[in-house]
Length: 189
Image (cartoon, rainbow, N blue to C red; front, side, top):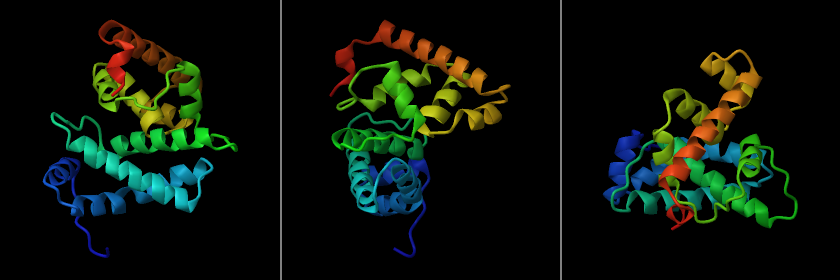
């Protein structure tokens, strides 16, 4: 494990499709601390970090090997979307459920759709149809887990209220795209 090859996102996809397990080792080294930080911040334990991370890597491996798979976001963003989905499903089963991650709380308030079998490739496809400002803002918030204050700084907004307002507008645009192009069945495997 000491010396591992660091792959770019496109190389990771190619190596996974080729069955090269070194790609998983590389992903483990590149993304473990990010996953660990997120899960520990959201009531997780070290053991749970291991379990969720391994399950997420398996999901990435399977998804990349599906016909027609195209990575439309950074691999770290894609992996974290899977990690968050798996972790929040696991948290729902626990009795001590206190979420620190605001993005999950706002997502729950925004829609009541269960994400148990959600097809994330459709979400990425829809987000790709938004303007650059909305793509960046929603990506920073929902996929990268950044706080509104940091998003305001990164995007040059006046304050966090502007971020909240713009996020709401972007979410409404996304909702319109969904309603125009998809039925609920399209999102579930």
